[in-house]
Image 1 (spheres, rainbow over the protein chains, first blue to last red):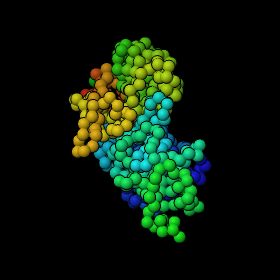
Image 2 (cartoon, rainbow over the protein chains, first blue to last red):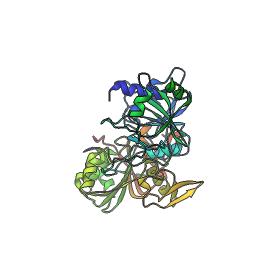
Image 3 (cartoon, chains in turn green, yellow):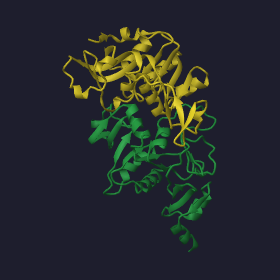
Image 4 (cartoon, rainbow over the protein chains, first blue to last red):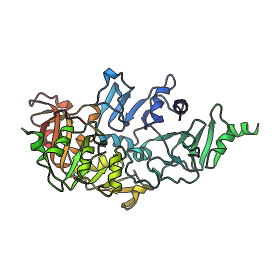
Length: 220
Length: 221
C-alpha cells in the first residue's frame, strides 16, 4: 500500500469528524487521521494506554520515553492533557465517554461487523483494546484499504475471519468508497474522485444499497 | 517506613509457583531493574505472569521466555513478541488472552474486593467461548473473575519513604491497578524522597498498597 493511498483514506475519514469530539485512533492508517482534519475541526485524542490530550510526534530532542501512544510511538502532551490508569482508560472507553473510535480492519461483513484481531489457522494470542473500543465508543469508523494485499475484497457478505464484536461499526471508509452501516446493512454514500460505482461493485463482496443521490447518478 | 531493598532482596520474595503481576505497556512503565533481578537473583519457576504483554523478543519480560520459568501468561497482546507465539506453538507456555479493558478491570476488581463483573467486551466473539454469559438490557455480557497475584512488580517515577508513589506520564498504565491486587507489592522507582516532600495531590498510589521500594538501576530493556 502506498503512502498516498493511506493519506487518501485518512483524508476521507477526517471529513466525518466533528469539532470538539473525543477521538481514539487505532494503529496504522487511523493514526494519520489527526494530520488531515479540516480547518476549524479540533479534536481531543484519547489513547488507551492512559492519556487524554495526545499531541503530535515530538522533535527527536523532545522525545520522552514515558510518553507514548497505543502504538508505542512517541507523542507529545497538549495543554489540558491528563494521565490515568489502564482501568480508568478502559472505563472511559466502555462507559461511552469516547465519541469516536477509528479502527483498521482485516475484514468487514455485510452487516458492517468488523474482524481485525485474529487470522484463521493462527493461534489467538493478541487482542489489545479493539474489542473494548467496539463495544464502548459512541461511533466507530473503519479506515481501511478497499481490497486486501492479494486484491480480494475486504468487505464480504460473511466474514471468514473471527469477528471482533457483535456490534456493527457506523461508517466504513476506503480509498474508493464510503459506506454507512444501518439496520439493513451497507449503503454506499460516497464514491471517491477517480473511482466509480462499477469498480466498487466489482471489488466489494457484500451486498450494498446506493444512497439516493448516487442512484440518480448511476441512472444518468 | 516501607522496606528499601536491593533488587536481589526484593526478588527473593518470589516463590516457585507464584502468580506475578508485572506493570507496563510494552516496555513503557515496565520495572526493568526488577525483571532483570527476577532473571538473575531468583530461580523461581512454574510462574504465572499477569502483564499486558510479555515484552518484546529478548527485551523486558521477553527475557524470561527462554528460561522456561513462565508456565502461564495472562494478558491482552502477546503477538508483539513472536517468541511468545513460537513458545506457545511448541506447548511451552499456556496463554490466557483477555481484552485489554477486561484485563485492567479484573486487576482493579482483584484489588478492590469485587468478586467478578459482567462486561460487554468480547460478547459474540471467540473469546466468549466457555464464559458464563448473562443478558442485561437486551445485550449479552460476559462474566469475568477478578485477578490477584502473590507478588506485583511495578514501576513508578518517585516514591517517598512511606511508599507513596508518583508516576510519569503514560508509564502509569497498569501500575496503579496492580499495586492494589497483590499480596506483596514491590515498586521500582527512580527517586526516593522523605515523607512530606511529595505533594499529596500528585500521589496516585497511597503507601498502604506498597510493601517495598527498589531503586531503579536503569536496567536496559
